Image (cartoon, rainbow, N blue to C red; front, side, top):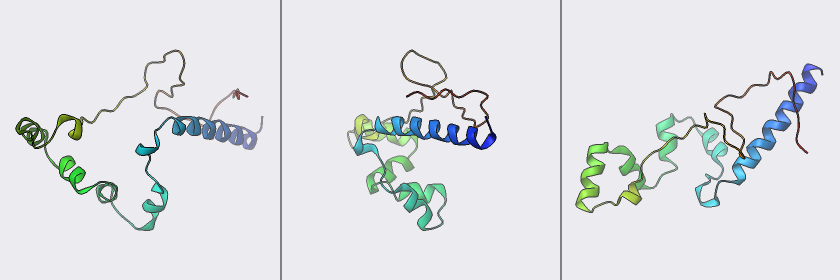
Length: 115
């Protein structure tokens, strides 16, 4: 398999996996036109993220854990509204869903495309 063919096959597989992943994200959690916003102006990461959040969300994310805990305890905020940032990495393979274990590479010696 030539490098060009391998690259095309890898990109096709990658695109299919991304489409499958994206289809599992409920519409209310999708950020519309994120690429257009990202390229519309030069912003640092914090400024860009701030354009996606409400005023209340910016206040919450700008507070320390101690302040958040105090405001939850006082009833000003609820633990549901504040939420707890969680990052889950698929380092453990389980039956069913594909997992990338955090790695992606175009340098594959064998690609099996599912049809």
